[in-house]
Image (cartoon, rainbow, N blue to C red; front, side, top):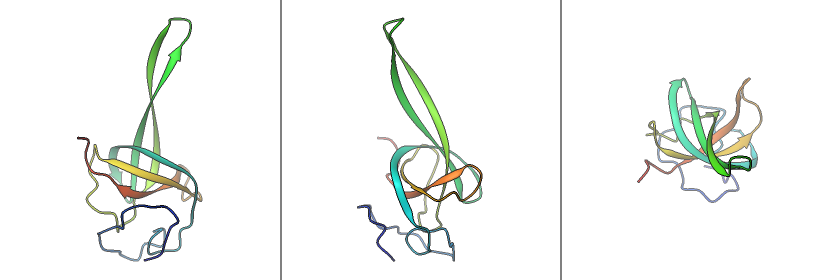
Length: 111
């Protein structure tokens, strides 16, 4: 297992020859580190992560909640991810048309 340059818990699952794994494969990580909630697991090795942000509307003197969704690669060594779990992502090179992030840690369900 190699060091990815970020202080995260080491993965516990088995690795199955995934070249796009930052821990056992050759995928390099750089850039932003984001956190979000898993919204969907429908695609193979790709998950959809939702991030909530609150912004102030000056005209109405109120806050509005917005949600953004982004796709992220789920390495095989990070197992046990379910809908609703909090995950930590890090930016990588584009892996497909919509995937430019990789999951580096699973923080479990919301408590």
